[in-house]
Length: 108
Image (cartoon, rainbow, N blue to C red; front, side, top):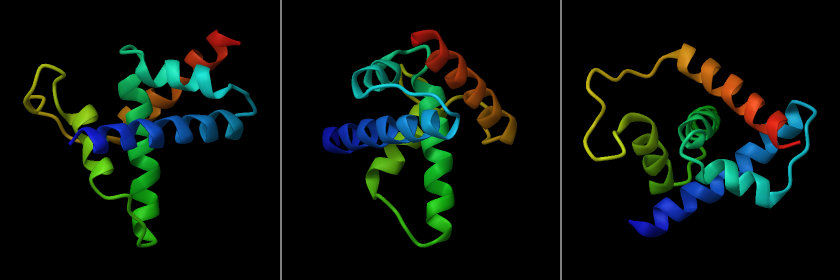
């Protein structure tokens, strides 16, 4: 649903702000929103946010269908349908971190 996609965007923005702080960088809400919406960085933000929520899930926390919306950003082709041969890999999370570090540094 559209509300789940909107919630996923909020989660991604919050996680990106946290990620920047954890890496001793600062960005404002507007910049975070731009990075979340940018098609070059959107999937990387979804990876970081999805990974964050996987860890929270171990403690019994969830955010409902918004997490499925994150999964769709990661595992589904933007034109529709699951990415052929897709599997969740640790290296993809590492690449996402690098992409976001560069994106945040670039906006400074």
